[in-house]
Length: 82
Image 1 (cartoon, one colour):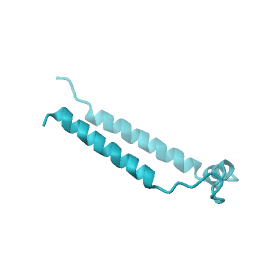
Image 2 (cartoon, helix red, strand yellow):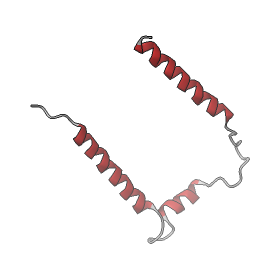
Image 3 (cartoon, one colour):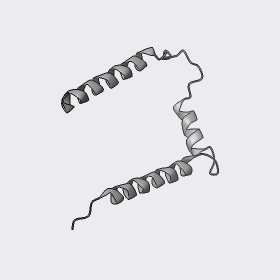
Image 4 (cartoon, helix red, strand yellow):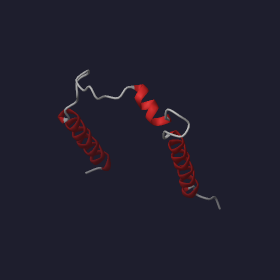
């Protein structure tokens, strides 16, 4: 088989698996789950109700670490010209 045909079959197979999984999941209906957090509850959990609670600083530091790791990976993968 040609590489283009093989790729097309692989993409089609993955797309069908994805659609099958999405259709088999039992999605909750709107208003059915009373324990769904509101945006206010999520904000209080993330940033806290006072200055010493919450996860905002931790999330910021993790994001900064991931950015530095991404830039380091790009720097290491970059080919040098001779």
